Image (tube, helix red, strand yellow):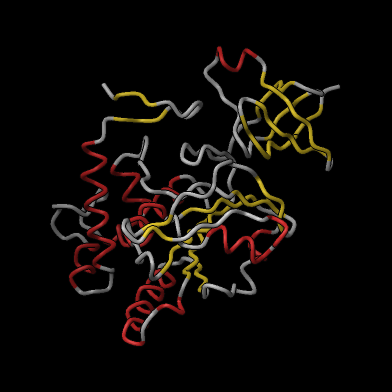
Length: 299
C-alpha cells in the first residue's frame, strides 16, 4: 500500500524512519535512487510503501552540512563566553541560511558569564543584528527564553553553532525526555567536544527540531560572490544606493555599503567577514553535489 507525504525523521545505516499519521515505518530507498545519484535526507517528504521509499518530493531547500532538507528555521546558538562569541561563524551561517531561504533565529547563551565591563559590548552586537532584521533571544546557562519554544510549533528547525555553546542543554531543559547527551568544554581548544552523533528530527511543541553535530567549519558550496553579497541582508538593502547596479562592495567607487562601514553604521566585523568570505569563494575549488553530499572539484 502506497502512502504519500511521509516525513523522514531519522536516517541510520541506509535505513530511514518515516513518520506518517503518527505511525513510524522503517524503509529503504529504491535502487533507482542510487542510479540517479539521489539520496533521501532527514526532512524529506516521500511516497513509500511498508518497507520501500518510492519517490522523494521536491525540496524547498537542500543542505549538505548537516545533510538535511526542507528546513523552515535555524536556531543559531552562540555563547557569549566559554567559548567566546564567534562572529565569523555567525555571519557565515547567517549568509548560508539566507541563501537557502531558511529563517535564522540567533540564540545567545551563557550571558551570566559576562563581566560588567563586557555586557555593553555584547549589547551593541545584539542590537546591531536586531536592527538589520534578525530575531534574537538571550539566555543564561540554566534558564531559557520563555517564548523561544513557540518558534518550533508547525516548523522544522535545525540547530547550528559552535560545539559547547549549549545546544543540547537547551533542548534538554525544554523537554527532559529527550535526554540528549551533553559534554564539557575542551579548554585547550576553546571549543566543546562533539556529543551529537545521529541526525534525527525530534518532536517538540508541535514541531520538529534537529540536533546536529556542532559546526566547526562550514563551506559555501555553490554560492558565488554575487549571491554572497545578496545574503548579507543590510548590504542588499543599501546596494540600491551604490553607483553601480552590480556593486559587490569591494573596490567599486561610490559604494554605499563601504560608506556606511566607514561611518560605523555597518558593523566593521560584518564587512571584514564579508571580505574574507569573498576571498574564500573566489579561491574555492571544492563543491558539494546536492543529492549525495560528495565532493567534486571545479574545472
